Structure formats: structure tokens, C-alpha cells
Image (cartoon, rainbow, N blue to C red; front, top):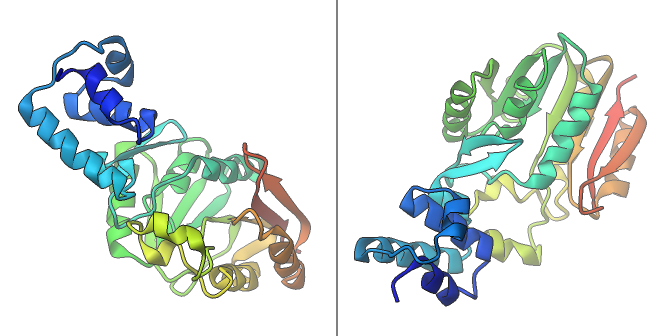
Length: 265
């Protein structure tokens, strides 16, 4: 039978949620509609499009690249293969930044990608938001997402701090932090390498950011970085060497070390 329920049963090797969301995208309906209407018939063009989509899913293409959309911080964001797909664990970074920010603060999001972090902060705070990325393609997507959500953000093209100036109260970043020989990279083959890999141990970008950040922070300003679950001890050491105080690592909802923060002297 060519109906929703039968099609879902035929995709048992794929995550059920992804398949329901994919159906909703192709049929132009909500996931709740898909769940409630298992008997809905699928046309030949719809089945053909779904077959092509599921082939891509089985090749580890993220669903967000197929639909062109990803939810983050309850915001609908456009994504392409020019940017990393925003992950739920990155909301931990947003939560911590909101907790440290005060009205009127100047906040910088380094390596903004699709703009997820900066837009989440801009729509949650009364602050002056700046965001940078070395990729012009990523900045185009970020600007479009910011316009969609009426987020007032000043975007700049820069390789980390290279083209930036001024002092910030908070600097936040979700930089690349995967080691170049990490076995998990095969499952991320469709995402931009520059946003994932950072040297032999995954810490090249973080070393640079931590070392240079004090120059761009006001006294007692904060640096907040997302990182891998097994990198916290090494990153805390980098913070200490750079002169940060009040250094702390925060766990995500899966109880994995995810964000380290520190305060400039």
C-alpha cells in the first residue's frame, strides 16, 4: 500500500522522527498530522521524492540539509551545507551566556555559522550583538536568518579575531574541536570540514581563541566556549594560563561536559 503508515514501516532502518519530519516536509503538513493520518495516500511523485530523500539519509546526510531548515532555541533557521547543523547541546552555551549578560552588554559570537547562537542571544537579551565568520557563504545564511527573526546583529567577516576590534563584555563561540583522526568524522562527512576539525587533538582553534580573547574583553568580561565531552580539563588549563578566573565547566542535558567559561581579570 502507498500510504503514510506503510511507507514509515518500510523505513525501519532510519530514525522514526526523521522519517515523520521528512514526510511532513514533503507533504507540507505538521508532524502531528503525519502521526494522526497514517492512512493518507502518497502519490507517485511524492514517493519518488521520498525515495531520493531516504537515500541521502542512509548516506548520513543530515535531515536539515534535505529540508533546508533546523529548529534551535525555538527558532526556525535556514541551513545549507555551507554551515554546521545546529545541535541541541549548543543551547547550553546560549543559556550560560544569557546568565552572564547584562542589559547593554556588547557580545561577540565567533564563528557564527548560520547565526544560531547570535540570533538566540539577540532575541533573548537587550544587548549589542556582533557575529563573525571567515566564510562569506555562512555569513549570507546568518544574515538571512537574522532578518527573518528581526535580530539586530552586526556581522563581520573575520578569521577569529583577525579583522575585529573593540572590547566585549562576553565572547561566545562554538569553534571546531574534533581531532583530525577522530573515528566519528565519517558520520559527519557532509558537514563543512573547517567547522569540525581543528588539528591533531581538536584544540588548535580553542588555543588561539583563549590566548587572544583577553585582548578583546573588558575587565571582568567573560569567555564561553563549547567543546568536546573529554576536553574540559585541558581547556580549563588553557583558561588558567591565559589569566582567566572563575573558570567553570558546565554539562549539557546529557550530563556531558560541554561549555567552559572564565572571567578576564
